[in-house]
Length: 328
View 1 (tube, rainbow, N blue to C red):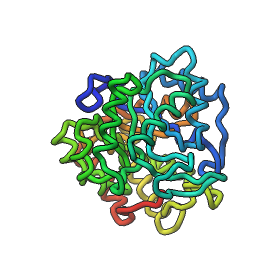
View 2: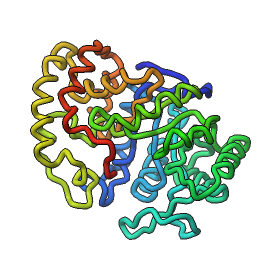
View 3: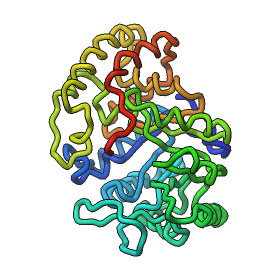
């Protein structure tokens, strides 16, 4: 495994990080409910592969992901860099309406007091005394960024968090959160535009770009995944890749990429992950994983160094179905 500093902090993180949105289950991920034993095995596999960076959020299953992680981390908390999020909550204490799901109304609230409560709630759910990093889940222009940043800095002084970052944001927002360590944004070979718009600003402030969605919720892991069907509430049912002609383009792309898989002795998931890592030097690869086999496979991505021609060929093969905005 390769490691790098998280932004300008002295926090050393693995280049590949564990995403736990899927652990929350519910109507968003309808094909599997994770157990405590499975989660413990997942963390053990991460440790074995050198993956020390975990990302979660309060709204992943409205508390389920955090609670499950907290129980699984008993006895091994110090082996991992633990990151959660703030701003989205279901406490009915104000903020802007964000969505209704599984019987909960979730609001987005970036006011200082709400941020403090979010962090403290996460600490309780995970039964830990601090978070290494906290991400503002959805940056909101309706509330002063200064208020949010002031509270995040206060939480650092109180020892409840070590650093912070932003997500679902624009490059202009990083100007307001420039002392944070990272931005976490969607980026994949099928939707690379927003990320590329962000890279120059990240470079300006020495900010880590943590990408999520690089495997397109599984659609870039191979042709077999394209035959799956999903419940209408499942996040994957809303992606364009469930429809033709996108599927046909992806089938052809997998055929074109197969020689590269043979050359590097890797999976399609490794290949698209290596493509993402080639796009920006200070990139952290956040991969949603629920099986130990996924962890073992994902760790191989950092070993692959694609040539410029291979990088260009891969993107050219899917260029006609690339999109700027995805409904997630």
